[in-house]
Length: 110
Picture 1 (cartoon, one colour):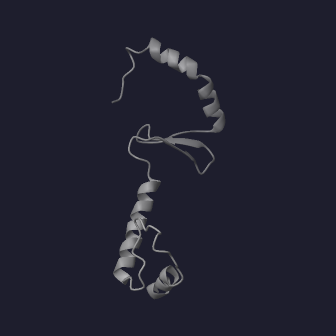
Picture 2 (cartoon, helix red, strand yellow):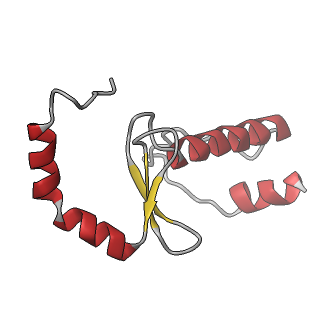
Picture 3 (cartoon, rainbow, N blue to C red):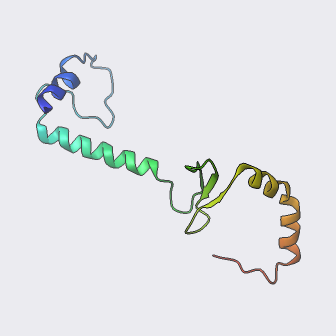
């Protein structure tokens, strides 16, 4: 099977010597099966790392039921439907004022 991939990957590629090959396998016709497997493993690991947000970074997703989930605030996502988010965002100034008024009683998670 890898022989077919090798043909597809290397058999029809024509590059001039001025084209840089940053982070790629060297394009020779004798790429070994081990080199191809290593490159596939490297690309899979890179792809997985790119799909996961960095620790502490927030991200947004649409849930299976069509709600908006915010990830990265705590252990579990905060999930609300669109109307709920709109109501909550409409109260943003009130929430900020409440936080300032009750600053001494509110705990800060660090």
